[in-house]
Every structure is written in C-alpha cells, then in structure tokens.
Amino acid sequence: MTQFPPIQYIKGIGPGISVLFKKLGIHSVKDFMYYFPRAYDDRRFIAPISELKTGEIQMCVGTIENVVESKGKSRVSIIKCNITDRRSSIAAVWFNQKFIKKKLQFGKLIIFKRTFKIKTFTVFLNFCL
Image 1 (spheres, one colour):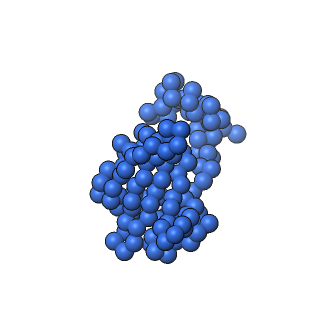
Image 2 (image 1 turned 45 degrees about the vertical axis):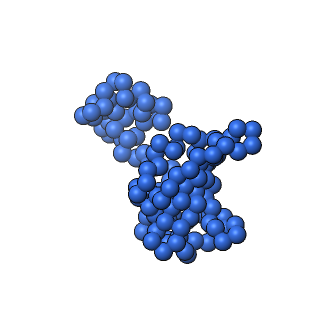
Image 3 (image 1 turned 120 degrees about the vertical axis):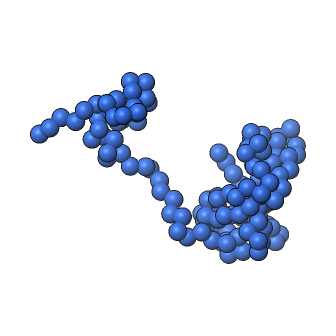
C-alpha cells in the first residue's frame, strides 16, 4: 500500500492554499482526487422563457435589457432587471442586495437557475444569495 503525498506538493498549491483545502477535509492527493462537488448543474436542458413552468427549479438564459433600483418599505433596496430571450421576457428581483446592480450590465448574457413564479402575465424570479 502506497502513501499519498500531502496536497501542498501539487504544483500551484503551497502551504497557504493547503490550509484552505484542509478546511474541506482534503489532506492528501487521494482526498483531492475523490472530492466531488455537492451539486451539478446539467446545462443540456435550458428552457426558453416562454416555456417556464411555475413552481419548478429550471435553468434559463437571456440578455439583460434594463436594471432599475428602487426603495421599498423600511428602506429595503429593490433591484429589478428585465431579461429577454428574443421571444419573451422575465423580471428578476433582488431584495436588499445593492452590490448586484454593478454586476448586471445592459446587453450581458445571463444564465440563471431558480424557481419561477407567474404573477399577472409576468414571470418573476426571486434571487436569494
């Protein structure tokens, strides 16, 4: 039975980064090879916005049309963003997350995976980061 070297001996991983891996329970090269992600997003099935079903977690892709920031009750910041895929559009909403406005740029392509809610002919996305 052979011993596996510590993770810090992989090229690009020194003693500093090996501390971060140890927090994940990765101590040796064998641990690193058998560490699998907790979730996997299957991007083979991306639904058009017009075919989204309410109450299901689905993946969709679109282009950012506009971004608007407003204040709600008790000074809660509300970021609203319209996303389109040429045929239909969707409204994405973030509550009390002002930093997200800097990341949302006009014309940028965005892929999102969320539970969708349909309210009065508009599809809403609630993001909780």
